[in-house]
Length: 124
Image (cartoon, rainbow, N blue to C red; front, side):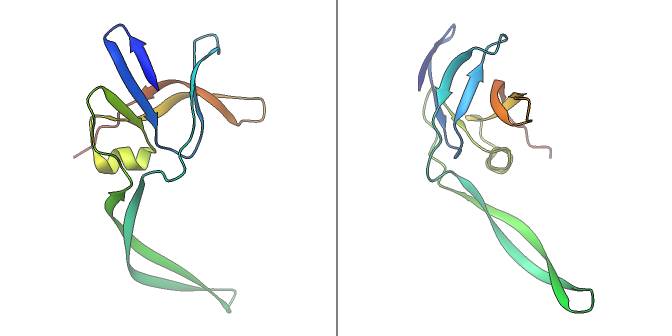
């Protein structure tokens, strides 16, 4: 979606599977971004396994895992932000990735929108 800001035109593209609504301070919908079918995901590699026996008969496996790559993430484009999951933003560590923030919930606790986006800085 192309948005006109005080700094010029930018594109905001939702790369999550969920519709995202940006809400004003009065909860008015500023814009809505449809979800995507094939969102970026962090791939992982599972390593060694620990097994625990539950109630003497059922096995519970606990793996160690390491993030290895991000799949389905578009290349950066000028004046474009991609809305992604927090995990994708943390792992990819790119300046054009944003995540929803300041969630607004209905009376059942379900998210109905957000009031802002944020960039995630990797803590090294």
